[in-house]
Image (cartoon, rainbow, N blue to C red):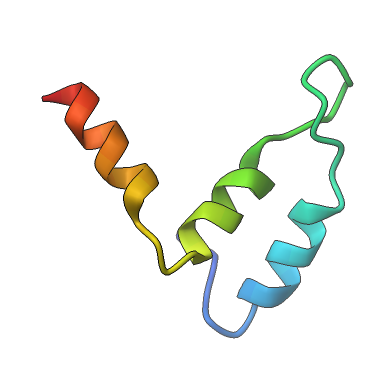
Length: 54
């Protein structure tokens, strides 16, 4: 992540989104799902994780 900048974020996001997301496929990634969560204004998903950790 140290190579992700505000200048290249959109391109990185676009490339990750084009990856296969089915876990049984070689080269697949769920990182695109996380990017979409991080971009949301609603942080409820983070609060749910924190509540389970506590």
